[in-house]
Amino acid sequence: MKVFIAHKTPRGYGEYEASRVRKTLKGACELSGAVTWVDSMLAFPEIVHFISPVDDYIVNEAKANDCKIVVSVGYSEFDQPASFFDVKAGDLDLKLKSLMVLEKADLVLAPNRKVAEKIAEYGIVRDVMVLSPSVNLSRFQIEDGSEREIFLRYYSLMPEQKIAISSFDYSDKKTLATLKSLANKMPNIRFFHFGTKNGRNPKIWLKLAQKKCPKNLTLCPVVADDLYRSAMLNASCYLVLDSSRPDCSAMYEAFASKTGVVALGSQPWNEKLVDGVTGFIAQTEGEAILFINRMIGGKEKEILKNAYEIAESCCLEKLANALPAVYEDLLNKKEVQ
Image 1 (cartoon, rainbow, N blue to C red):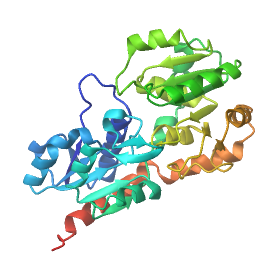
Image 2 (image 1 turned 90 degrees about the vertical axis):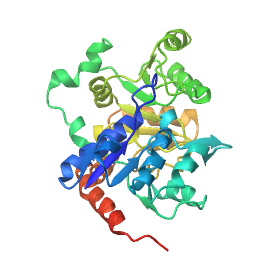
Image 3 (image 1 turned 180 degrees about the vertical axis):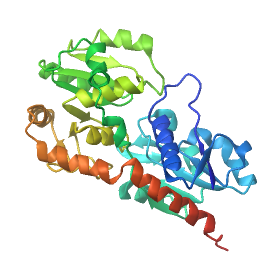
Image 4 (image 1 turned 45 degrees about the horizontal axis):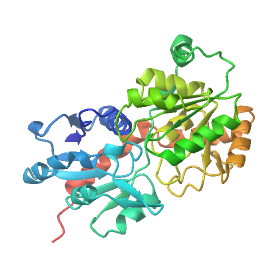
């Protein structure tokens, strides 16, 4: 069967979470041997798989060509152009453009039960299926020492330097202020943040914003995959500082890298992050500092093992086994009269 995985990063925006999700889906199709992914409607796909509401202009064409429409919702919520939700009064709220796409969907995929329940509240989707986020473990199984140390060389860091990394959109001023506060209180740790600002790579803004940061905090744009992967592998800790959205990319990559995860604030949208089991969930900055120090101390091996087992349970190979059946069932399903 042929599947068009529809996503094109808008002009001027950074290649971020949605691009990684698309690459993962393409990899699963190739690995399955049962699904051929195509790059456009001109290839006459049977299914069109959407991962972003910005590609809504393709929906009507897909419907006109009798294609089945699959929509992955909630997998790229830190990638602003690709996010399906806004956050209002601390809760997720589907964007108008998202609602327009979902009204035409034959199947909606959600990263966990909580997100699936939120989508179902709107009553516009017939079928919502939970399909865990996937991570390509082989990306983080690097034997070449020089490739693994790219990040250290790029930022002139010593191997023994303790590193914490985070990822969210720079437009989130409150979360950025929290990151600065943590860096101020932990001067022995180098903090690196990777993100976009309103979906764009803000080179000039970053230079100005960096001047207002503690010396041990470096603000980075979205970087090339080899540099980002090396950063994750060399970090002692990955910080989840935004509790209002599901983290379906970087957190799972931290699990795969055996990098400890510390979250601040309740994590209703991240069901795989269990306090004291797959990471730590702090309710205050003081608790977060204690948990970061515990992760950096290198003694939480059981937690890292549990988290890695989560990554194994939703690895690319598992997705490659599951995805063809999802597509096949959809094609075989008769329309409800």
